[in-house]
Amino acid sequence: MKTVIIKYNAGNVQSVRYALERIGASYLWTDDEEEIRSADKVIFPGVGEASTAMAYLREKGLDQVIPTLKQPVLGTCVGMQLMCRFSEENNTDALNIFPVDVKRFPSGSLKVPHVGWNNLYDLKSPLTSGLTENPFVYFVHSYAAPVNKYTVATCDYVVPFSAMLHRDNFYAAQFHAEISGKEGQTILENFLAL
Amino acid sequence: MLTKRIIPCLDIKDGRTVKGTNFVNLRDAGDPVELGALYAEQGADELVFLDITATVDNRKTLVDLVRKVAQHVNIPFTVGGGISSVEDVSALLNAGADKISINSSAVRRPELIDELALQFGSQCIIVAIDTREISVPVQTISHQERVTDRFGSERVSSHDEKLIIEHIVHTHGGRKPTELRTIAWAKEAQERGAGEILLTSMDADGTKAGFALDLTATVSGALSIPVIASGGAGNMEHFQQVFTTGKADAGLAASIFHFREIGIPDLKNYLKDQGLPIRI
Image 1 (tube, rainbow over the protein chains, first blue to last red):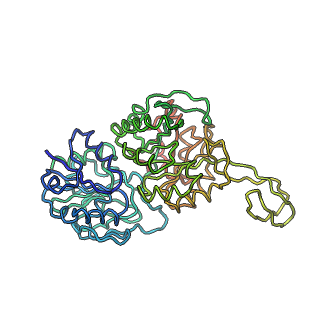
Image 2: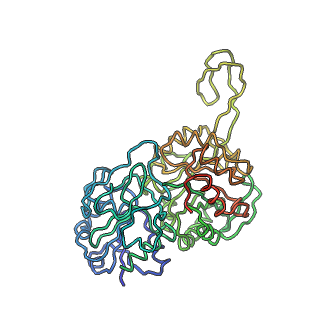
Image 3: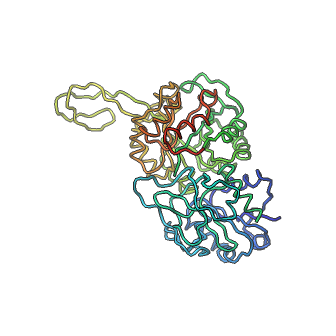
């Protein structure tokens, strides 16, 4: 099986690479279209800022590649946000795989960013199979997608938001499965087993 | 519900974990990779590795250690100690660190926070603040008179006080006072792009008498980013206090975990029984 991690300027993705190594999965880390298209599984990671990341994807032509992929694709954190239509973070037009808009958490009684372990509910994804009803996973983000028809895991922080999305061959997680303990490891294993 | 985080801190010297009282008199408490993996297994929510030697010669050792930790640990971990440039941060993140923590270098040159946040994102930049209470003598004392303290701040003296207590930022492992006030510095760090504040009370550190609750609550209340409280943990109740009275988002401790005075599973069960949001 060939797994590709999409290489772009989305901050530190070392944790994703080590997480795959821990579960014994080999991978290629590349921005080459041919390599990406011929992969069995594609991981689209990301930390950092949306508009800079999106500009880089356009420059490399990856904005045309990612939405047309046919194999299972997993976007995480900013990767997930870029798979949505638009992000309020520097008013970024994104890939529109999920036709929803990513919004900043409203400021109020709770701190923003949302940092730490929070639990999921309403699990409807094959990626969460084998997990408990309300597994804890690790989040670090200030922007989130609202709950919508593609939501397959929900989390509450200030408001309920989409912790995971699923549409056809596209899967996305707002949290960092790669550093979410055994639960995160199960989610990655489930994705690779699709 | 977002949970309160329990964070064991592993002080690293020459690739080994050490911890001493008030940062002096170090004792060896084991292999950092093994200890880190054990804590993760036991339910630690994050780990902090603090390189307390942090000399140029040791950077390669630290980067190698970070790589080994990243290979074996499946929870977030932070690396701190002697980090003073974009290059340092880049090397540590590339080795697999999830976050880095800066302290003295940010005090020396606050713009470093902006540069790191811009380059790597706020989510991986922790500003560590070592704070100590200092009694500051006021210069003029009379009823309802404006007085100036030695930091140049004006205030009204309403009675015959001779000393006021100020929370002052310290560097060099808490030994060297700066001109910075702790709360103002924490706010500045947030504005410049810090993602979290690691607040260590040097007065409480090593005492096992509890966290500095009032100061932690004040700093946490003044910020919109999370505050990790450090220094003074001696028993399980201290954690309960720092998460309630102290308004901390996370609690960090070292020796009580390393020397197995408190087990992480016991601590987390206790806190959950006390009604706190805890990941079990």
